[in-house]
Length: 429
Image 1 (tube, one colour):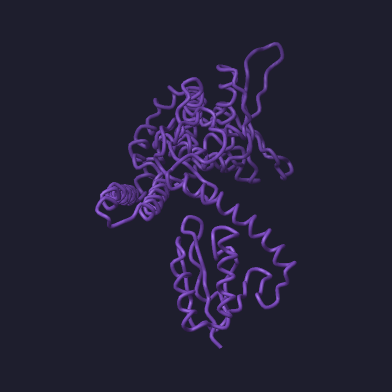
Image 2 (cartoon, helix red, strand yellow):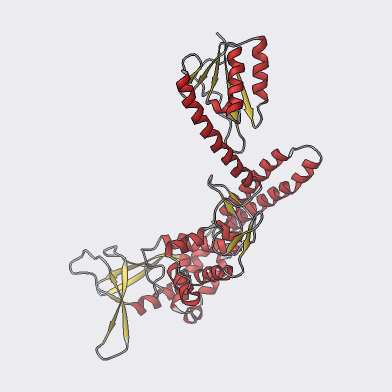
């Protein structure tokens, strides 16, 4: 008994199946990728040496339309070959006419869906925008997104506010106050992570293609935003936009409770006193509050003393080497990308193969850039030298101090000793 198998895969949509999926002892597997050349070979071979059974995954693999599929089925049946679809309820020896009519309706629906997905896939190869409305700040051009001159500056200022203060809610409030543009916090978060504002395109398959249109954010700003978002995720809710620089960073070493900032005023007096007290202290009696200014002054003093030593102990050259490695790999892939038109002209590659290769190179470049942007800034030593000067901190506002604290401090732990206390900094690196 001779059993053969046939599979068809569209390179735009899927990878070829593994040869072990059939679960039968197969004499030969005919496999097509893009064009059905092997299917024609199968029909020719069976005219001289027919098989008893032909295994396929689904009937849709036999053609691009119901007419093509029906014609192929008739040719195979005329050769006396029984067809078994492993992923459909179809066997040429058992399927009734009623079931076949029902199956044809499903095939028609699947072929239409596949045709639509193929169209979207071709748009991906050409790096054209996906279907749908353009994001705020852009409008749709002929084959790419184009900056909208009336709304792009609004988005740009939103990003600038977030980069300066590291506060998403603050940036949202700024837009409403200056431009009357009301957006939700969740919308603002989507703006910060949307690759379209970085000049890239993202598709439903998860792939990202770089440099497809004019960006509102440059690569350095985008990398800084990603670091700020990762940093803010470590903080308790709503502390990222808190007005005080120590908000969300201080933890009581005695009860391990985060500490909140409370303000106290005297009756008929405008002077305000700030204190840090544990939010949920289980101790009896509860841990006492500590003056905010004392913690702030001690934090700055500790940073000036400890940060340079901590940074000196880091393996910064390896970070620099990793950055250079990513840059070199990106440059190599860009060089290959630029050679593709010449390979088409000389006939080494056809247009379809070149488009697939270009698409793969662009997605690989995007992945390398994403990994590179996740690295810490390589100028950390220079930053540590600058912030180790006490005068640097005295010239900053509370929101500016908040930005720098959260750039390298993970937690500030207060250790109590009777009525005295000590402060310990835990750095991110």
